[in-house]
Amino acid sequence: MKKELKIYLASPRGFCAGVKRAIEIVEKSISKFGAPVYVRHEIVHNKQVVEELKEKGAIFVDELSDVDDASRPVIFSAHGVPKSVPEEAKLKNLSFVDATCPLVSKVHRESEQLNKNGFEILLIGHKNHPEVIGTMGQLPKGSIKLIETKNDAELLKENDFKKPLAYITQTTLSVDDTAEIIEALKNKFPKIKGPIKEDICYATTNRQSAVKEIASKCDMFFVVGSRNSSNSVRLVEVAKKAGCNNSHLMHSEREIPFIGGEPVPVVTTEALRAVTKDDTDILGFLVVRHLGQVRREQPEAELDDKVKRLLPRIIQQFELETALTVDQFKDWYHKLNENKQIERISFKQDKNKLKQL
Image (cartoon, rainbow, N blue to C red; front, side):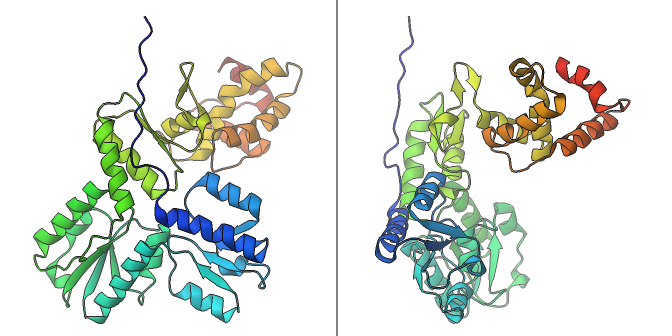
């Protein structure tokens, strides 16, 4: 008898108001000013949204120096920007629109007010996240100290600070992890000042609560989102902590972890990255692993041609952040053999070995 499949949908889910607002700003700017419009950094951390906006006429750039046409408007992402960015835009005579989420702007204003009132400020957040960079950039360098973990908080000492102490937080953190860090700070500094209203946004809190409610009932849990989205990554962590270890982050239907019992590429990539953080090693391994398939498809082709055909296919399919030429793959393969104290032989001779893998 076929087992009944039960599917739970978390509620609330989907984009928050700040994300919807930012997307709408880009779309309305394209409608009003025509294409292209420039967007500094990804407007939101969602791959599909970014691709759709590109098709409509948005050009995404890393910095204002990458803007080729100063007559076109520039939009700042929902994550917020350091004060230096709009100042640079004014110097370049660029027309710009700020799509910073209002809840992120709230944290910016808090930091300014705390600094004005003579507090030293701790920011709980993730290093190099655009929101953290934007928040720290509201004040002169050194005015805000970043705290990423409970251990960071516990290592702080009273004599590290000469002024009253206050903390603010990134808006997209794990509620539970942040609570642990705040507790550690309060134990260390009983008089530390926190925000009047917590900084983690209501949408983040509500969605994490919704995941907690259903994750323990699930054999498998999917979070649909991009891997560079702090919110999406946190939701996977929350699902695992709530009792569903078999939780996955995916940004398209082709990433559903198991189809016909076989793991899809992104799951294979994540598993390999748990063993090695070097995408070059992962790419080399996957080329070797798939050579047999190419041999069946092109039995008469030379080995170099087979490798040349495989490399771009695997990079795209497994979403690897690296690239190799055929010669670089050969060097990688020979170096691997040397490391294993295997006698180095010519690549043409090695093809017999590769066929067996």
